[in-house]
Length: 316
Length: 261
Image 1: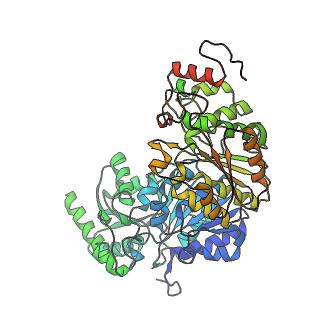
Image 2: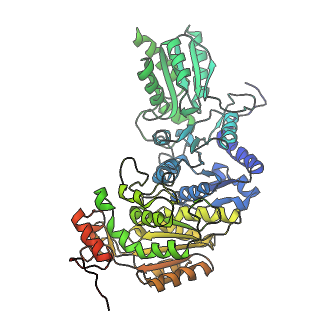
């Protein structure tokens, strides 16, 4: 790993990219619900106070106001914790933003377990599923700082509504250089022939680590970073599954409704494949240090390796 | 319309009919040939279930042919059960799930402020709808942002699906609540055109957001519908609709026009 690239949180990329968008485009507005310091929207607010609306602890109101701004020609970036953005304000997102296909970017931070000590109330484990269910909604989970930055910059020109999930914890760089965009959002980071590991967010780093361990055991693992969960790049998923014939998915989300389901849907429809899923197994979160939680919920590289081996064993 | 559709919400449509008539045919600065004209006034139907009366006003203002009205809620018709901003010309926002319209209106007002656009926003809410918490998040925000071009009109017909609003969940005293949130308020008879027009003009000139609490009668003008909760979401039969229309036109059942006083 490059010594100069110290791990950075994807939410920091959101803050920097949002500020850059504000400089480039007059019609960019941003909203927050009293978490501007945590979501990193505060830098935009300091630079463009007339275009920044901190609505207080009122997420429903924030989403509907964002809709009104978007109806009127603005590109609206609304941020709060993922659990509130998708759960507390679901109906406002559904009727006010998704159904009328408005250019609101819901940039939710603090996705997943690695929120850590705050515990289950603040750990969003179902946000990807909720957003994936909504027609018109594009769902993006960047893997690192550079990908998050590119996702936010690129979102300006994306038609319709979008959900971008960022995290609280610092994560290693997957992409060493700045990215021009997300492409189809399904990057084969490492080619392999025995098993495909589809991962998103912080689990991409774990997937790469697992692949390195598997290689030492003579198992060739392909690692695919799925940053656009909806619409998922069916061609790349099918090509990988066809090549390897087995898969493991890894996400910091419930195994219900997220990446595991998205990949399984493609597999079931186009190339039935045995798939093991790493994620939160239909449980709520709890307090603890991020690394302790990942261990406790069986989401470490070692767990990935174990599941990959059992999937391959079961296939025979 | 609702009789042809076989479903819909006649009660709340009738209680709001006079207010919406005043807006569309006296107050709103609009260009039906160019529904998204940036300088227009905006009417936001937050109580989206009263779509029939909005559609009638839009059709008779020239946004689309009046004959469409008879296809309300039909599979190939743009007139959805609740308003859809992309399907029906003149509909400003998609609504139906209650409590969101006032917040959306604030977003529009903030955008108009940034773009230095003229235009006033009139948002119609129900009294039952006022039980939704988001309404009060919006009430707080409108005063906080000192929105100048926003009027909330509450159609106080006193009824909701399950009965009288005062019995289900009392929302009163509504004028005092809006005043406490920092709004200018006025209470009117929502079926008196002079009072409606006067209040709407007044609301455009207040410093900050204005709330008009309009006392209305659910099912207004149709004796067998008035003040009956069951007419919230039940469409009349064709026979009932004929009787209702006769009454609204001032005809007696034998078809002779009443002379009036």
